[in-house]
Image (cartoon, one colour):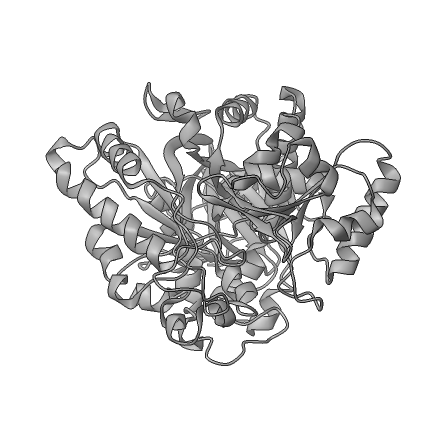
Amino acid sequence: MKIRYIVLAAVVLFSGCTKSQNVDRLFVGGTIHTINSEQPLAQVLAITDGRIVFVGNEDDSPDFAAAIVTDLAGAHLYPGFTDSHAHLFGIGQRESTLNLEGSSSLQEMLERVAAEADKNKTGIIVGNGWIETHWPEGRFPNSADLEKVVPGRVVILTRADRHALLASNQALSQVGIDRSTTAVQGGRILLDEAGDPTGILIDKSMELVAPLLSDPTAEQRKEILMAGASAMAEYGWTGLHNMSVGEKDVLQLEALAEQSKLPIRVYNGIDVEALELLSAGTRFGADNRVITRAIKIYTDGALGSRGAALLAPYSDDSKNSGFMLADKDITAALLQQALLRGWQINAHAIGDRANREILNWMEQALAVIPEKSRKIADPRWRIEHAQIIDLKDITRFVELGIIPSMQPSHAIGDLFFAPDRLGSNRLAGAYAWQTLLDTGSIIVAGSDAPVERGDPRIEFYAAVSRTSVDGFQGNNWRKEQAVSRENALKMFTIWPAIASFQEQELGSIEVGKRADFTVFDRDLLTVPAPQILDAVVLWTIVDGKDSYKAKP
């Protein structure tokens, strides 16, 4: 029997029974994708108190009296999409400072800087998001470029990957960087042919200009975090695994959640510097809207700036193999403490050497601290990015229970320069999604925003197509590493739930779970791949309430 309903004041009554079941909200009129193998598709979804109380088809649905009925009008509702690796504060900064993302050339970037200088006549100019790999100039920018458009100004422009920045001559001068300056261990100061700094500082050397940057006030931090969270909700994310988080932001996010102002769920991986925050134990704030139980560590830098640690030199820089940022002994002690205290580890590793080293260190810690001595028997440690893996190390992920946390958009951006950095042979283990899945691993997917745009449509498209948004793939980019639509959906839903210890609460649409949903106007599982990029986010729903709703 097809369900019929009528609206009486604020209550919707479903006919066919003398007594109706009261619910807060009912979803009808579309396709519901459950990720439940016993019932993969449904037509009716009911929620009460932020949890799912019914999911099924029209013919087996009870009668409901619903305070709110949402007619999906043919749309497709999925479990809430989770960005499993992003930087919320950085996303908020992108929304509120000079955004250099999308600069198609060095000249365009400089024009944007000049325009910002016209608005900001005397203060420091801070920007984020440039990346040179697509530029026709074919090189890094330098401080001499800045002198041509903003002479004498203090300028600090962070590369999109946040592993390098460009500082102006005035900025270098104010912190005393010159040809005699020694780079910080774990960082580099690029020099020109004459031996003078070019203005490019890589990884830990970026800390040298930190004194020029004022720390935002508490109110400014709150506004930046809210701007980032609102932007992610508008994109369709119901949750975000927040990486490299300081104590101030953890406390600010908890306060926002307690005040019912935070539109998405946040799972924090804190900086090592904030470790004292976890000394009293893992943190679960505002009915688990904000969870802090992970530690983010860095083992190496980024591929684009040639800071990723490789087993052999870069193919386009024969004297450079990148470098490790992590110390073995310090990391080993931290890993053992993590097992004893129940902390998850989120370890940044991009190069094949970095991935091998952190796998070695994790294996040793797991051997030293047996399951019976751990606070959590299955710690669900993660390697963030896992971009370049030697084929000998692929199976070690599943053997050790280490979860690869990867960002599909990196593969469709890096395809323009990674072959030059790595050469043909190493591409076999580069962004090797399907190979990892074939060995039995799960993959949790994210965007690394603001390094990338942070759009789930781009991430889903990248995972299933492995081509740029313009349809380009290039030679030898291992198209067989693209994943199925079904696995891509798991990479953004149930697998992130598992990777954050929340599979009993999130990740699929089943009775008893939290009512977190992402609604698109089309079926991401069946439309031609290019049409995924044009999908419209109609609703982002967290705990049964709209965090975002598209305008009619």
